[in-house]
Length: 389
Ligand SMILES: [Zn+2]
Image 1 (cartoon, rainbow, N blue to C red):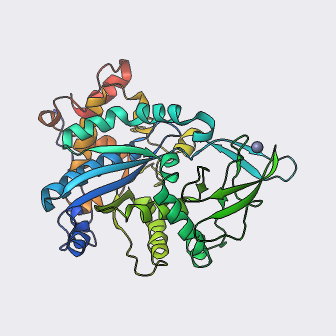
Image 2: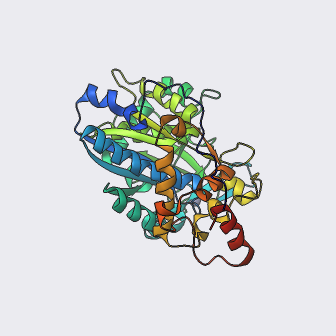
Image 3: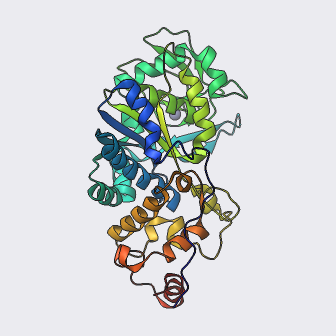
């Protein structure tokens, strides 16, 4: 028999004595606005299989939504934004050295993007939704940016750009807008050759240069279909402005690594007279041994510093050896424990600690959910050692 492993240990947090459940962080905004519905907004990446950190954040969204429903008696819903604007391929212009990129949406088209979203997240989200009773929807950035509301808020942000530029890009003051070449879909990554021409509140005209097809112009109006690529902070700002138009209280949920970015987004929203930054919830990040957040790029490059305890599926959920239902139950169990006290939620977890937490799950809690079936040979034995089975 194994000795019982130590329980989840976290230092006392700064909210101790003030916050007993992390969902309570949205209560002041609920009280101030009197809203009876809450929509939680979170992002999903489609440029590769999710890692454990991504799925922890998404699981937290469902559990936080359920907690909000139970604690405040409000109707809850989740809206995931799928980032089909992520670069699918990159080229360097041989003449100027400028970087050009083509997004997933431009390269693959809407139907294949929808297939990727379903492939990476559909099964898991359905399981999490069924377990929590919280409905969800997924909207691609490509679809969202084409809406009238998004265009109007984007145009408004361009009108405020003299102030916004130093908030959205404090070091350079440069906030590039990417407009794909109408003939090939490639757009300039850093916007050196993209220029905003004199524009009004209802229309913005940009001049840009394609590396294959030369100069072109693109018009953004509330009704135009031109795809618009924005920097991460600018895109999030406009999305939050759109969310604020809803009758429901928008709650922006992100991994805690977003804290510095959220600080800038809050300041950016104050550039609109009378605007109030949205309610926000930050979720625990999953870290490598070095303390760096798990990142798809670093995992792909092989530069992630990982302990022997890190399971392959922690880096790539698509190699999870069990069923998606078992994976969902594992995530729900882990994140419910993190949410049991704010101090367990207001921190990060290394993959080593995640392995320890999974290993010490009592058999009665999950009925074997923590032990993926079909593990061969030594790996199975290693898992059995950790789980005490
Ligand atoms: Zn072109």
